[in-house]
Amino acid sequence: MGSIGKITEDIINKSPFLREAMTDDLINISALARKILPEIEQITGKKIKEGAVVMAIKRMTPGLYRKLNIKINNVMGDLGDFLVRSNLTDYTFENSESLKTKQSELLIEIHKDNASFFTLCKGVSETTFIVSSQQAETIERIFKEERLKSNTKNLASVTVKLPLINTEVYGIYYYILKHLAWEGINIIEIMSTSNEFTIVVRQNDVDQAFKILMDLKRSN
Image (cartoon, rainbow, N blue to C red; front, side, top):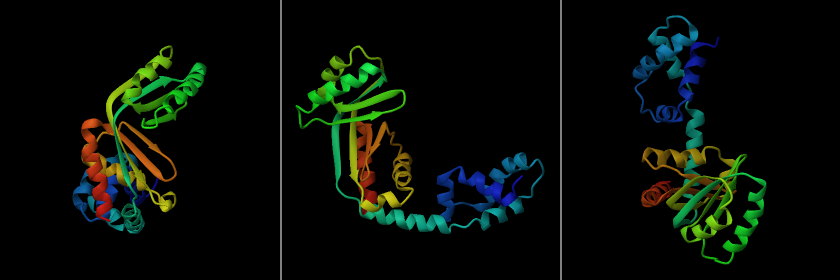
């Protein structure tokens, strides 16, 4: 059984939003102690004084989080160009041997139109294609014998160019997604390369998503 301090920290760390708010001194410590006290008592199997939990919370060091925030803010200030693409459609098919062959056929067709958007994400059991809506007929023709698991229309994407140092700073994606989540933006898909990060959202959310990302860049 861990100490009250360790148990308290483990409970708080389950919620990154909460830990960050504590770092910024936005949390009433006494109220937080009362809220998590029942869970601590359940884990320890004994009655715990609220004051002991308050002291455990106060002893939690915010140093790591403050240093991390400084690093992330520096990365946000160095974000590169943003690229928005609209009128996208998402197709997810169950993986099969024939799907691999048809992917090659699709690439040949897509490359005939340099203006089209196309990205592919292959998972263990399924593969997702996100394409410009004008390519929908091509997708449906080539993959008509495959098992379609989901199809979402009226999507848009925002691609952000990240500085090279992004691979050395952890928490960048969390920081971006956190701000989108706070504003009620639902992420349909996420794609990334070493220095690019793309979110796919519904068409009617793209303007707000773009504004949030631009504000993150301007404020750092």
